[in-house]
Image 1 (cartoon, one colour):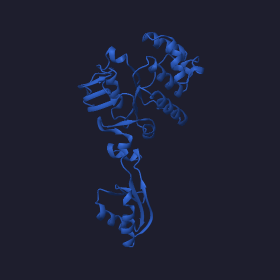
Image 2 (cartoon, rainbow, N blue to C red):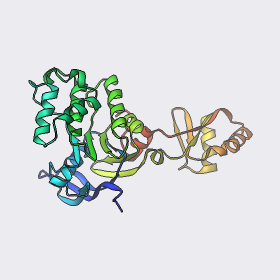
Image 3 (cartoon, rainbow, N blue to C red):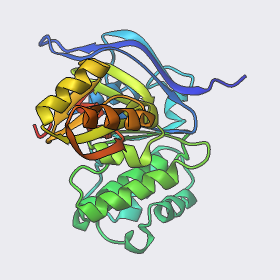
Image 4 (cartoon, rainbow, N blue to C red):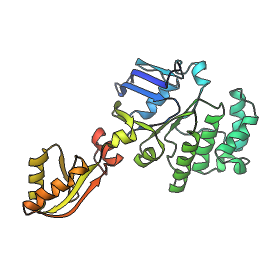
Length: 302
């Protein structure tokens, strides 16, 4: 039976000579055919992890397999395409000629150049020098280069960095299109909306540790109940006694209850019977942003 995962790491760790622990015992699994979001704040260890997966740096300890082989081995690299820390091309060559150079180095038929240019929608601008490209076009050419080998696994490190909103939307669509079928896409990002829109599963990394790995739906969790009532202190006291302090949180002038929405009638009856005026009572979903800040310990707006 074919291995359902294409990336597996066990206690993967990277400590630099300065004593900095960049990646700390990461256990991560990426399944075949999914778009996997590697989510974390800047400096969390995302790029270091990806560099280990493609063999650019060696781990201090722990193990990893990529496409069934050791990271950086010829067998693994033959099945992996990667864009890590931005694309690097000759500025005086056209986009097309840059891809021809990469194709020759990778022993890829030159006809594949036109195919990947079409995939990333750069065919009409492929004759222009790379040095004249916008940031979005440069990122697209980097993705095209990563696709030259028609890889089973595509690794993209912060592919929307530096893009304007239109460019970000176009890159998200490109990632979604590329992730169709059997190809696996592993994309790192610190942008919550990006991950929520394009990824099937997500791994959240903070301070070098993988703190959660699940589907986006599982990460967000079940719906809860939002209550707006006056006096709010009295409402909070009653609901805390009803559900317990771990269920009730207060923010933005409302009470958020981590409980089933079908208890709304019971909640309303209890509050109104106690003389508390209820102005809003509705189901709500936690946002990925809320979960992210809760898992990483980052403060919203920081």
